[in-house]
Length: 416
Image (tube, rainbow, N blue to C red; front, side):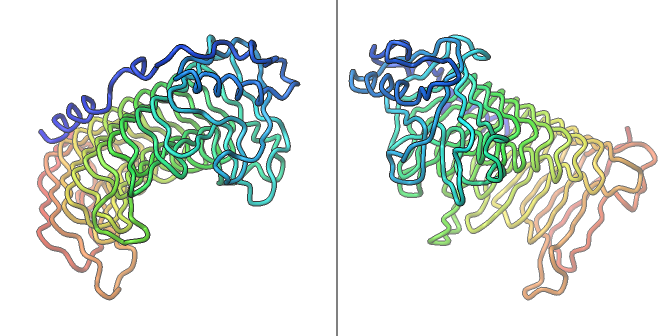
């Protein structure tokens, strides 16, 4: 019952409608502030004037009418790298036509070691919304710098945090770096975030990422052909090496993912649900749980459809409890579920496995290094009531290569 309860609690905590973030009555159309939308004029200064006017008036909606608004980078307000636009607290930047309202980065905007963001923020940002337009990162137009990892199309919360921030109904394509990133800090966690119904494609790094948060909803997005992970949530104390995860309460549901490195990456986070996602043709795994220093705890991976990835669900590191249940995992070549590097406290039950062939391992215990000091261990694992194809090699239902195990229970596999 943990997954359903946790999903309901997390949704109630961070699933408020984004309309409640729209405050104030400032600004209006960016064209009233001099934006042309002709694809030639640098419209960044005019759009920024509209955003600043809305913020000065106490908040409001800044509207993009159909057109292509060319943007060029300038030194960022936060003093790090460059940005085209700085979103302010209380401001909604909204397009009137998602497909035809286009913010397009000009060509040749990046150089060696560039850290640049098309839409950024300064310090803490609250009650802010991005909605209903397209961001074109012009990745090919950045020449030799098109494959960089630094920066993003949208990066909010750098050197601060995000509170009551929504990013929804955007098309984000061909960005250098991340597609959408919302972040906080260990000292000041981001809260009440919503990333919903966006299309993110062909980024040079991660599609959607959140770090150092307490309460985020990532729902209904489509993420295709990003170089790294499609959805990545992160919470680790890299400086203090605390064993406690620093990010909590993420619901990652009903997303469609194709052609990325890993579909959903849960790294050193707690109290999170990944459910009802459709994940296909990823290069490494459909879902991965990973520990750096902090312990992943109370995670539920349920009712996902994962196909065409080498590994369905990959586990790395000791955990404080992970449930993998009722997933449909098919067309995998390496393992349905893989346990690597000191995995503990995992329950896998009620899953349906349809491997690439009858000799593919369903559950694979694969330490990263045999003979290490101390020896890697597989512990407190329960595998029960899962389904496999009739005629699958019984020696490949559970393939264990760990030398050290403790309380590993592998029950029956039903034929289907």
